[in-house]
Length: 129
Ligand SMILES: [Zn+2]
Image 1 (cartoon, rainbow, N blue to C red):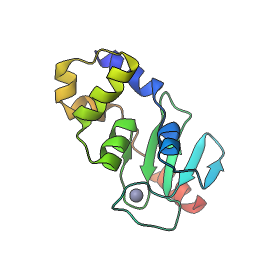
Image 2: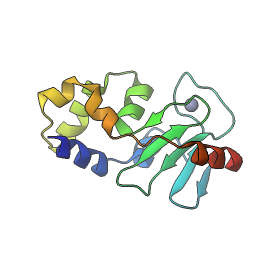
Image 3: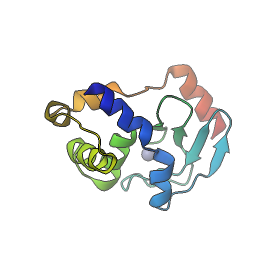
Image 4: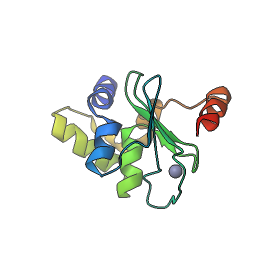
């Protein structure tokens, strides 16, 4: 079942989801990185401190302004103010992927698929803004 969660993340795109919600990248950087203004409703800002990483196994994001991050589940949950479980259900139904009840019920599984930025990458990104 965990494999299906990974597959789900690989088949969904943060960039496409943002575009569907009228958020376009401010800058396209090298290494498959794109910067945006933070799309979370409670983070108002002018600087494009929201980074999307497209060149790993599945897309990840990190906002250097409000510190939120990780995968598409976290993004949709934060932007639409709905629980992880409902986001997972919606995407898995759309993709026809079977996600077990136990996975749906826990946030731990979702959190496993996070790429947390290191101090070095954080400093590097900050210098690019
Ligand atoms: Zn933010």
